[in-house]
Amino acid sequence: MNVRVIPILKKPTLDPSVISNYRPVSLLSFLSKTLERTVYNQLSCYLSQNNLQDPNQSGFRPAHSTETALLAVTEKLHAARSAKLSSVLILLDLSAACDTVNHKTLLSTLMSLGIRGAAWQWFASYLEDRSYQVTWRGSTSAPRRLSTGVPHGSVLGPLLFSLYTQSLGAVISSHGFSYHCYADDTQLILSFPPSDTHVSAQISACLADISSWMAAHQLKLNPTKTELLFIPGDSSPSQDLAISLDNSLISPSVTARNLGVTIDNQLSFSSHIANLTRSCRFLLYNIRRIRPFLSSQATQVLVQSLVISRLDYCDSLLAALPLSAIRPLQLIQNAAARLVFNLPKFSHTTPLLRSLHWLPVAARIRFKTLMLAYKAKNGPAPTYLKALITPRTAPRSFRSSSTARLIPPSLRVQGRPASRLFSVLAPRWWNELPLDVRTAESLAVFKQRLKTYLFIKYLN
Image 1 (cartoon, rainbow, N blue to C red):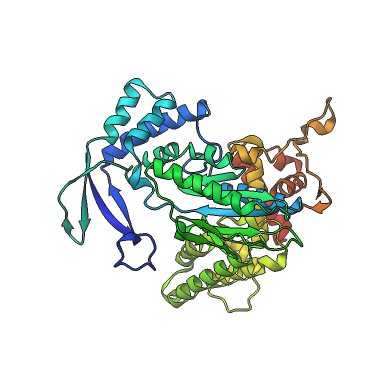
Image 2: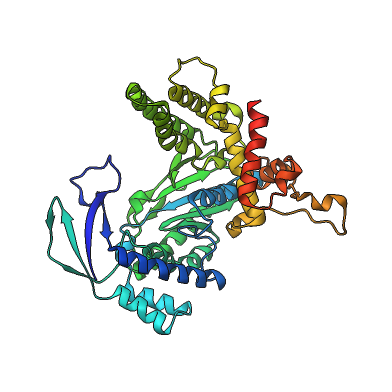
């Protein structure tokens, strides 16, 4: 199969003269993508029915998302702080991950998963005898043989890459780390007592084995973009955790950007809120400049797609923050509502939000958290979220057995308040809901009833 490749800048702000700043995206034919989608559905069904996928891999799986992945990571970090433990969060970065996948190793991995016979031969024919041509500014290069990698822009590529890296989890776990992956973004978490003096050696040994594993699989760890975040327990001293990896020094940073969210070493998300507020203000400023040429309906669509969607992204991570912390986000939403109706700065926004059918930011956060709780209780949801939710069951039948409540964990863990944990907040907020909301028979009905309940609570 011959594929046309178009280089696209990874970020608009990167230098276009540097080749490494481009991502090669394959332009596949419609027939090819249709066939891949059929194979993808059958392969995903086979992997799910036989529990062959890594439960800590959230990339390109139904009911999984960057938000559920980040929620799993922050849950572990919050739990460690509640137990007076310090933690280290390491964000690994791979160089040209999908482009260096070894076909023989990938086919061997598929065979170890039970894919044999005609199905295995199809994957072999799919990977072998591929060629590509690069199109740039109207010119096309001569065809070149493609001996490694899975195509960017394909339907099967992300799933095949996640299967290719599945054995990495055993290497990480052997050093006492927990981990979570989203495609090629791998997050390592290690919690330890503040008095532990062997943490640096443990991290170095783990990263060295990860680097060796990647070399054996023709992947390359990028030390210059690998980030390390040290989250201290309360009143615990900071530690010198400078780690040497492939002749590069990795030092702890105050903040790290992880799947689009800026995480700080105090888990306050203050840097994330500040960055989000700044970007939304810039967008509102640009929309305001063209507002005289737009109708209210067009402005609403533009604001919702560019600004409100940013406020909604991973907002469940902000669930336990005080109202003073999320007030900047509420001011952004108020400004967006005024912009839609073209009203002055100090106009009252409650009737505007009601007219636009926008929940306030605090209510949107609670809405997202309760939606995740419903999915964790009734499905579909990742197994790592289901483990955080425990339905209340009685030893015998009571009138309250049909109220569909959850067991709220204790607010104190080893003498420390743990009220910031999703596993505590979600059940307590859930048990406050009216009976008709908790016992909704479908996700669509629950979503409608929950939104009505929150509108009455927050906007009346």
